[in-house]
Image (cartoon, rainbow, N blue to C red; front, side, top):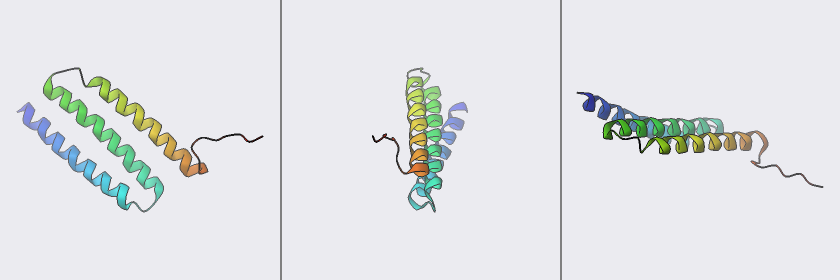
Length: 93
């Protein structure tokens, strides 16, 4: 029973990722696209966590941490790009 529920959760996470991917492609504005990319990252983390539970292993926990860090850095980079037009500011003399 537990495995069936987890497989259902993976199915709904997949649908959520597909919906967010649609928002990334067709989003009305750049902030909507950034939020959709962040939602995809969160759903990937949840999917890997469920997969780790199903396989009864701790091996995927490092992947969860890596996806979380990359998602955070990507969101910050996109936010800075939207706000200022550049990600890394260089001071000119």
